Image 1 (cartoon, rainbow, N blue to C red):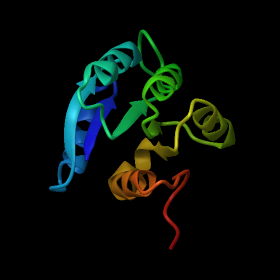
Image 2 (image 1 turned 180 degrees about the vertical axis):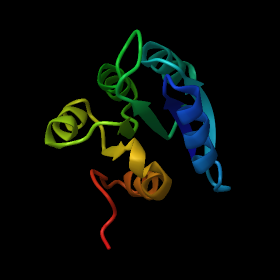
Image 3 (image 1 turned 90 degrees about the horizontal axis):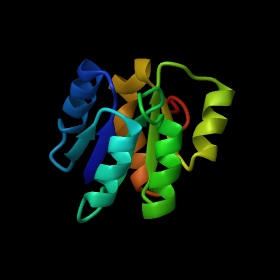
Image 4 (image 1 turned 45 degrees about the vertical axis):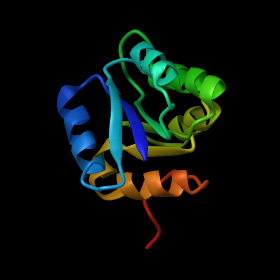
Length: 130
């Protein structure tokens, strides 16, 4: 599974990459520090990424705008990351074409679950069911 990830905070980016690459079947094929760079890299990758993970608040282009552009062009599943959550954020993520939303405080326990669910054709908009 090839994943492109965009986050403007290097520590968060490294941490998310480490979680993803803790599995043998996951490869972070590209990283970006803003939404415009994420769109550019997603388009340039051959083959395109299997999934794109985007932070909401990034310089140059926010994650929601980048998600819309990437989804319109490539139709790849998108997960949104944010420090903020709530119904309004989830509605904005869905409106942008995202198949999932994860609060950054839950990344450690939920990211791989969300990736698997979205790659299987489902959605992930909250903590996993117990």
